[in-house]
Length: 128
Image 1: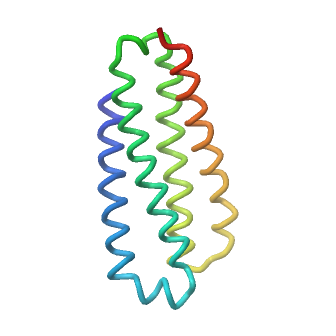
Image 2: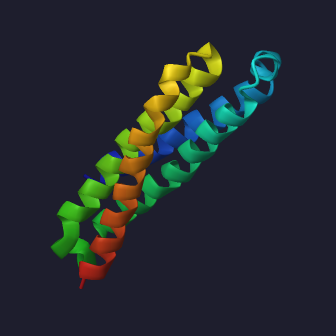
């Protein structure tokens, strides 16, 4: 499982940098004209933060001290991965399309991200 989290973290990092660059250059006029620059930037920022969080999950999952909390570490990883896909993905889709109903889905991703952080905190607490 550690390999999965490290690979996903690296890929999210790649995606975040690419999306940030594309938004600042290729999409700048579109995002500014439809007033969605802030949503795009938030999507990119959360993608990058949680790319780092997944790298941490991957490293923690390899530690022998975390053996007693591997389930929580894995739960943190899944929540970070799915939460980022929903949160950042829906914000990016909203920014590109202007379809407001997509904004109603974003909080689901946010809740998953919070659950991921809670799982990581619990795993740290329960680790030997």
